[in-house]
Image 1 (cartoon, helix red, strand yellow):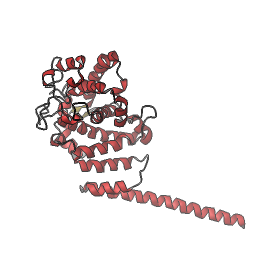
Image 2 (cartoon, one colour):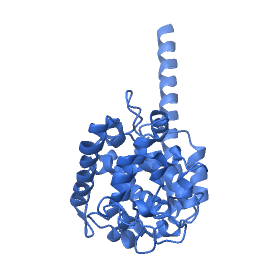
Image 3 (cartoon, helix red, strand yellow):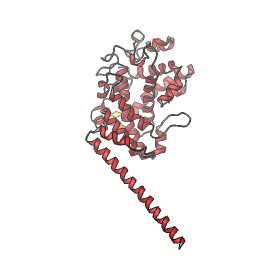
Image 4 (cartoon, one colour):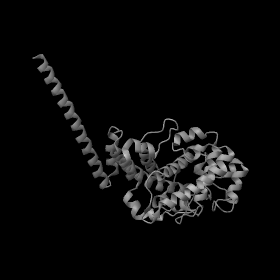
Length: 332
């Protein structure tokens, strides 16, 4: 009799806990559907409020995609709009970053505190760190997201992340590079600068020589070495936190491109796009990082906070990165 009672209690408890789990799953699905409804009607605030009220669902790709979508909605970004009106603006070749600076959101950015820039950064961070970080490097990666969400879930997240990183990088190039509607660096109205940063600040002969070399950096040359005031600390020194954000946004874009299936997407040859960047990056490694003994993590670091930690006191290395990659690929 006692065994029967014990068994009955066990059975009842199991049913209750199982039922509780099912109810929680149903409630979560209802919440997701509610957020999707808010997003479909453009009610970004309600969507974001509902997502922020939820407990983080670790390992659930849907949770991270909806949270990122809510932030992206606040930024005025949508994948549909990106495919309809933006992605065909991307070109390959030596001015590929210039082409990205012509995006609508990029041209609309006139202030460092631009809300679209802020919220798009929040959306990107959600997806970038959704798979955690590496124990040694502290870096997030497409590989970690695949390990967390599986091939299918990671592919979905990485594609969404790639589209947003295109726009965020374009916004950075337009604003800090003072680009006009055609993507011409130094021809915009947000400042008077023709470079992202005034590299002469460091007094480094090799860096100055690179800026002068054969017009590879476009309007940014040694005679027009004026930088964005928003990339300085007010005393002409490099604002490392913001510079690291540019570096990690770009490195994260490359990481995604290197770890998804590439091809032509509405007239954009992403394979060639990646190859063009990889050529410039390898040239930077071979001709700057290796001979100067700079840190190899310059071209791999994807965690902004870690970047600031690693390169405090070594800002010159970040300046070389910016000149070799950003000024070179934003040469229109």
